[in-house]
Length: 116
Image 1 (cartoon, rainbow, N blue to C red):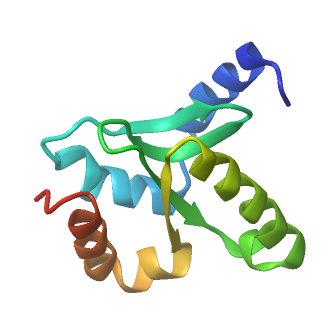
Image 2 (cartoon, rainbow, N blue to C red; image 1 turned 45 degrees about the vertical axis):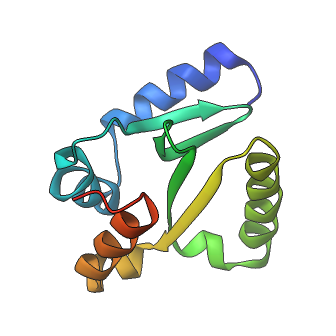
């Protein structure tokens, strides 16, 4: 999927159909921050789970497919593409969202510059 219009339409669909972990992070932490974070932001041929444009930080939640060889390889290519554009990628597993939510939120706040 490389057509910008298709990607934008798909990102809108993803915003409406967030995973359980994305909903938890969004509604129970990110949405309440006093900063502008975008959901399902299109950058190049990729859709970022969450994006903080002011500091060029992407927050990605990784399901089990990201831990298989093909998923890891795709993530490396994606992360390099984003890095070349000055975007830092923060990755958290769905397991961490479910089991260590407070620690994930603290880590994100620290890496975004101490936002509360």
